[in-house]
Length: 126
View: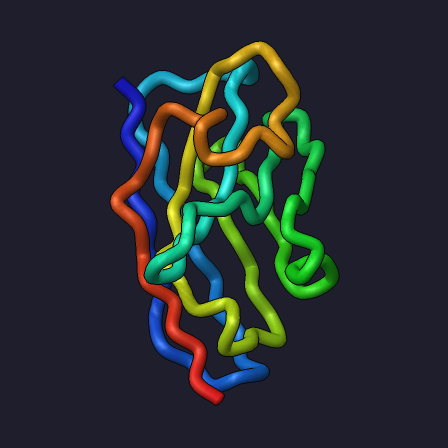
């Protein structure tokens, strides 16, 4: 059974940086997609970025392009989200997700992923 545990959230001022990590346990192979999602209070969970084991990245949220970078360390079985130039509107609970579905990794939305971590809070103050 695949389990995901996020870490690295916290509170920062606008313009600051954070790196989120997601440790993967259990069997996972190259058929899996991995992704980061976020959910602000009163809003739906939205896709931020995804990555395949082959390293193909997608950024569904145009506002994070150029500021966020998703990466996957296959050997350490750890997913990362490097977040720079953070803005108050980036404040949300961030979730790591995985899925072994057959389609492409990106632009599936939250319903396209079936394994979730518990989330880590990111708060950006102005």
